[in-house]
Length: 319
Image (cartoon, rainbow, N blue to C red; front, side):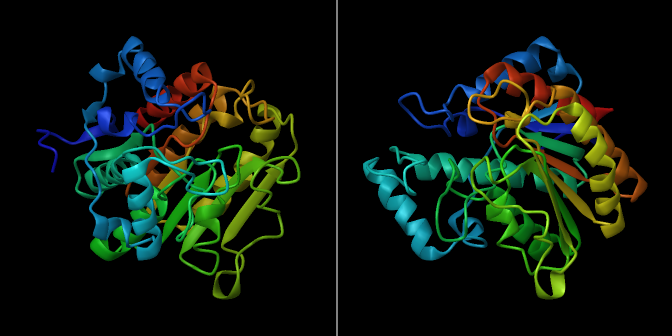
């Protein structure tokens, strides 16, 4: 419990621990992303409308619920030296990368446990949603997959079986998708730039889940240049898919790199898409009778875009 006297409408987990997660020397995922969000959060006076809690690091045994021991040891080793990369070149090591990554996982768990414990109805974490990390390797700026860890903790600690994962980041959430491709109780709905024009090159419309999970995944690749009109045309289908799964908990990865003007992607959504996604998923969670939504910042490399999109998410969750 976080010590709040009454249930908060929305809890935002933010602070130094997750602000340190970022890469040096002009890397797109720099450590200034957290503060870009925080400045607008304060200017819009959200600190008077929602509750705020600091992050705490995840324990190693929590990280190991999703990741392999060999990979966690590898991250620890690179964290001590700060040398080399954690993948093929996108995700460089730095001194303390293990600790910073553990704080991202821990922040997501703080937020999720607040929702499950009745401290907050919904929650948001800006530096989180690291959806490319696989069980045994880093990828695409993502070291530990906090989403995967949260799914495992929801099931083991709280007995939550049916979970929906919704991803509106420009990049396909491959680290989550393939880890749970054959899991029939994890509904995945992912709208993203077509993999033929953007990393990681996955998430085709015919990828719908394997074996017992066939039909429980929905990939919606959209073309480069897709705008709010295309988002608006596809979103009702995605929302209906999620509602049909009747999830007991909803996770939203709301990467702001789908907003027009991002330096490494090609979509042209406005931050209004993020507001709509948060607002509609919150309303859906209320219709399902539990209200539980955990939103995670994900990607986004234009600082003005991420500040507005993520704060729109906070507002949407509080609506």
